Length: 160
Length: 259
Image (cartoon, rainbow over all chains, first blue to last red; front, side):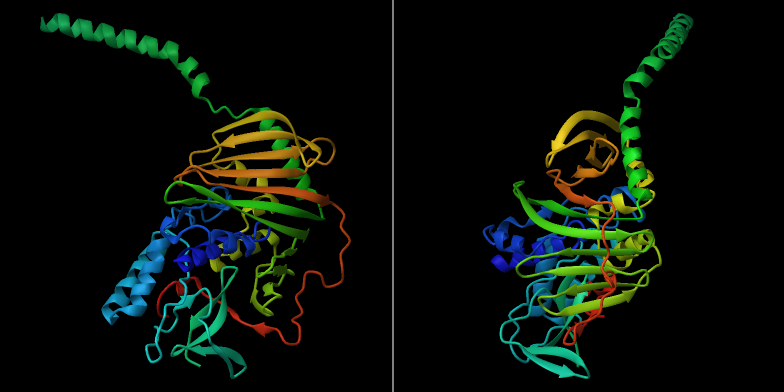
């Protein structure tokens, strides 16, 4: 249950750059908060009211919704995956939330995630494999590569 | 009856009109934006001062508030430091146990480097600090909340939606006597503490987001201001360590299951 909230909080921090970057110490603290509580809101950045491209982010955030949608995508059929992807696109389109990378779902070997699935941390037991100068991490039937999403380091399923 | 009614109505209308015309100035005074010129004067003095600095650095302590579904608020704290050289250089870093990060901007590229994981990403960036921050936000989802204050046109940006403003009074932040100002707008209220004297530096900045349930706040306290910092060679340019791994920034569209 903890893992649901933790990535949400990490993702939230990732938007707080320069002056404000929040350290990873905070997610350790949040583990005390049951995931059922979830997070519904964070402050706007000043730029969202005072600058260019207003209202681009930081509406009320449906953290749990985003995470649940991705779990469904991993666990369910192709139809469910499409729905989840659609929901996520809608969320982006309505500027509803900064996307929250979910924790890696417990994907069994031979049950690969859709390419491009973003997770906030690697599943346990991944092994590093360099392919063409890029480090891939293999586990649970998936290859991941590291990337920055905003200022947060995430892992994305990819094909080496 | 019809005529009487009509006359009565007309009289009411006339009276009403008179009343309105009499009332109007009062109403205007009552609702008028109570943006106290003294508040904007102090603010502008500060933003002009900061805009006029060729280079500067400071340390910050930041608090971000999250609102749980129950309405309960949780605060998260972090420390950061930054150094700016106008018009086109910035370095900012924060240190933590698990996720250190340094932000480099040298006028040509923008780099995020996580020393603990020895991972970095670099991307071409616009040629001024202002344009770079706009680019980082709109294209990379990298936000600099108090970055408003770094813009040379910070005053215009800050005051854009403001409908109210007042001078709260003297307040001491970190041992420094400041003038506390409070501004309000339709969605966001904010307060700023500006140092008294000939260096009107911002010492604290608090943003209250009213359009999110629970009105979460973001606050930053700034300390150790240096308006003539010594620059180290190559301070703003990232040179990757030998073993550092280069990764990509995900495009914003990567918020999809597939791409």
